[in-house]
Length: 148
Image (tube, rainbow, N blue to C red; front, side):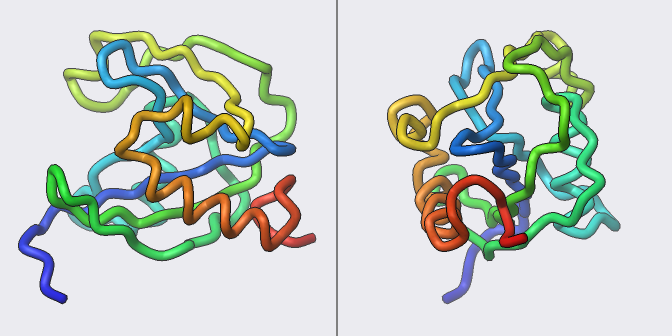
């Protein structure tokens, strides 16, 4: 299958005991950290940068690549990753993103979403990715991104 696009993104599901880290964009709803791959970056480097820019979290542990999803509108390829949450993150916080000029005008509410509520809470664009992430987490026990 040929994909008529060159836009590549990375999206990260950060897991902590049956919850996913998310942020509430004032105009685009509840989302996982996601963004466009920059020239010279690997998909994993993009994932780590976007998490830091959008929610202020540094991921130092390995990320697990779950594959790619082709987003139909706007057409792009999403590299899907899952990671365990670093210890000590609070239940909620506010973060001024450091990414694009558009994002810098906002402050995001960073929250934890119960996996059972994910499809009701997240923007519909994220539903196919959430299905992949939840299927993976069901295989490994739902509390961590990888088996220990």
